[in-house]
Image (tube, rainbow, N blue to C red; front, top):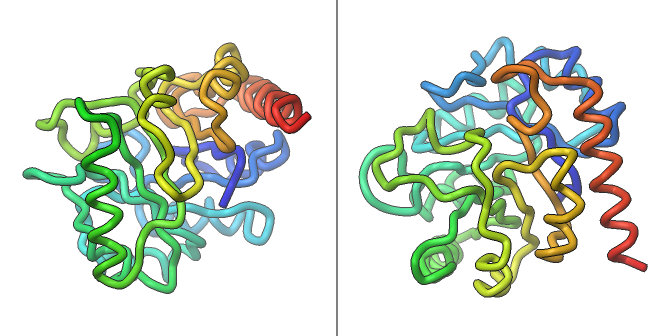
Amino acid sequence: MFHVKICGVMTAADARLAVEAGADAIGINFVPGSPRCLSTEAGREVAMAVEGQALVVGVFAGTIPAEMRRVAEAVGLDAIQLHGHLAGDGAVDQPESCAAVAPLPVIRAVRLGVTGFDETRRWIAEARAAGAGPVMAVVDAAVPSSATAGHLGGTGDTVDWSRLVEAGDLGIPLALAGGLTPANVAAAIRATGAKAVDTASGVEIAPGRKDPEKMRAFCAEARRAFAAAAG
């Protein structure tokens, strides 16, 4: 769905700068408790700034499908990203959510467990059995099972790249997130073979405040690494 995504975009100006830098997707955060969470009205302003120029993804965690559909329509989202836990208590996104927000495509944020992607594969299979599965997965850094909705991403922690390779394919396109910066994104792409990357804190001055130079450098490094991998 995308190759380079800048997530946690909070202003129309930053959205335009992200696209000018080379991002083909932006993420708008609607997760309560996150320092990057926006209201529906503010999200609409961000989305309108890049309408037709980039994929606009709404990030949710543990939100009921009816509310996600409402926000998606009001904001003008192109896709939904489910960033909650796969199971347990608190901010959990149920497999049935994919079908419930259709026809909007779903990007599923996942994390490596003790057994790699076993839990993720079960979730994807259950989603497909319920009527629709995610079209893409974003692998983010591991968080405690007790982590609340506002602390599930944007932490700056990195994914264990070698374990990601060992975990194998999920059968859907995979993007790498988790602590990616202009300094390490090319190495991450080389190490994992990822075809897409996603960053939030790695291109910021402060939570939610994007740095134009970091965004340009991140996109340039990622694009060069993708081109090199493609030969």
